[in-house]
Amino acid sequence: MNSAPFAIETRALAVRLDGREVLWEIDLAIPPGRFVGIIGPNGAGKTTLLRVFLGLIPPARGEVRIFGYAPREAHRHGIRIGYVPQRPQIDPLFPVSVRDVVAMGRVPRIGWLRWPGREDRRHIERALERVGLAHLAGKRLSELSGGQQQRAFLARALCSEPALLLLDEATTGLDLPAQHDLYSLLQQIRRDLQITVVAVSHDLLELASHADELVCINGTTHVHGNPEFVLHSHKLREAYRCEVDFLAEDRAHHRAAAGAAPEAKR
Amino acid sequence: MSDWLAYSFLQRAVVAGLLAAVTCGVLGFFVLLRRLSFLGVGVSHGALGGVALGLVMGVEPVLAAAVFATLVAWSVGWLGEHGNMHEDTAVGVLFSAAMALGVAILSASPEYRGDLFGYLFGNILAVTGADLWLLGSLSVAVLTAVALLFKELLFASYDEEVARASGLPVTALHYFLLGALALTVVVAMRVVGVILVEALLVIPAATAYQWATGYRELLVLAIAFSVFGTLGGLLASYWWNVAAGASIVLVLAAVFTVSVLARRARRT
Image 1 (cartoon, each protein chain N blue to C red):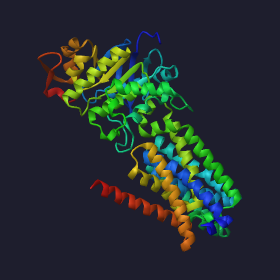
Image 2: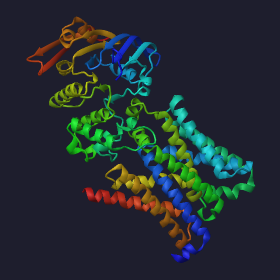
Image 3: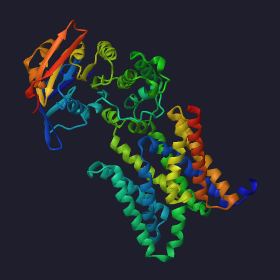
Image 4: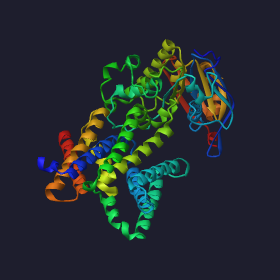
């Protein structure tokens, strides 16, 4: 196992898209084995930051390290990054079974010019069991509900035995119980597999209930710490440019009410 | 039937048809999955420029078309990535330019106009033994390479972003697929001609899509429909004395229509 002190480390990271600086001065240090939530308003650069971690967007300035390596180098050193996108760019009617989709996640592990062996098949079945889809493995993906499909994509990400799992608004379109179940599952996966989980989300309180740390960004890092600290920080309001009140009965059943302040618009 | 196969030119036609059918069936699977139908049209029409260059330069036209079509396909990929335009726009620009080049060259060389008709609409009955070796080599090369890279191509075609995030060289795989598509077009060009080659690429896979419940089934059915259409078309061409390329496409279109109607009937 890699002995780097941080799963993700960024120093003065800046990113430009179409000539415009969308992220600047991002300094993060996420130790291995943590469950970190990245929050922020629309257009804050959350997805962009995730894409930088994945090596899909190069930094304009500064540095990003995944277990000590540049993101594109990490794969070459055997560090796998599992990724669950917000809306997979797939043909929803293409005839693939849930097992086929999950097996695709194993492809980078299998390697070139090789076919899946017994060990690979075992990992595929285990990933299906872990997300509770073993009984639906033979079904067509299009026959599954939105929540089940997200679990299938999560199983695909787990199939490569990732050291780091990145999720981009994976709960979009799911109802509250399904959101809660997915976050609980992520918490369990993090515990069982000892991997680092980074989830981008708008579900402030659901994420706060499950994550070890929250990072709030809006172009740059506004506040980073344990969920209690972040949710009560004035910097959260600063990042969202609005008043944020939490009506909490208990940590598992939070609801948020956000009232836009006049100065909310830039 | 025995009559039919007694002629050596028909035997060669059947072998050439089978080579084209299997190769197009396999590539059609990816054309469908990646929605590259228009690219197929572009590359096939663009191959005509290569044929024309080959004829006037004294180079084997099939080889010249293979090189030219590959360059057109890769140029489309490059423009789609770096040219500030969508890939279908690049196809529209390059395919018309390449085809215009072919027409311009051949219009200035009247002695080759007879050959042009064969490449436009196919002349499977004129396939020679040497042609078969060339088409066979191209088919085997394409099918072997696709088989070796199948799982990576499937992943990159199904979910490009996640495949790229997983560390797969998605851009290189895309260029590989474009090259394989260009070579497949050239193989099928001798059978149905550049005008109709798209049918052999798209219709079998689209027909299979009506029936398949899994991607393996889709692949097998695409090949099966492609082979059925090619052999059926050749037989129809022999019996009714019509152009072989057009017969093949009409048989494929008939099977597709029946499949779509049957699928609708099954649903209701």
